[in-house]
Image (cartoon, rainbow, N blue to C red; front, side, top):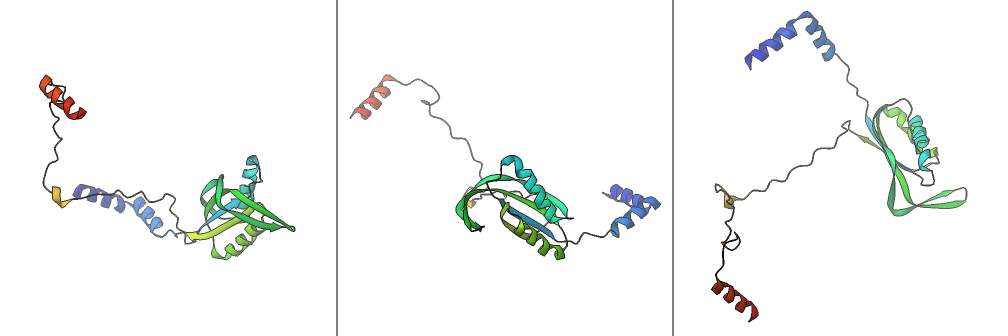
Length: 182
């Protein structure tokens, strides 16, 4: 461990490395909050026109840092959503669902919400503040323990002679047949 430490110290004492260390230390961290918008697109849109709807949503978001997204996919809803437009009532039992995760200033959120409300192809949306991590946490493995088996080695059970394919005498065979019949 000591040689690696000495090597690292030598690298850092080099004039070029010192300049890199200062630039990394003085780098301004991005302090903008991270948001995620999940949206339902009306199912009356043809699948080949979904890309255009997603581009409209991205245009509404404006100049933000896009972190991740999921292209809308068909989803059957647990209940029917109704929407009143132009004196008619529209009912939807399925939608296209997608989401976009992005970073932007807090001041631009009301404008984004207003733009999403005005978009006719977006049935519903949910805008939340979240964290930057893309990948979900790995699933935790369950570990079962037992004090009853502590210190013991588990052995494979030995098979009976019959299960090993050994010979069975006629007497034993007759006894087992009689036991089954009676």
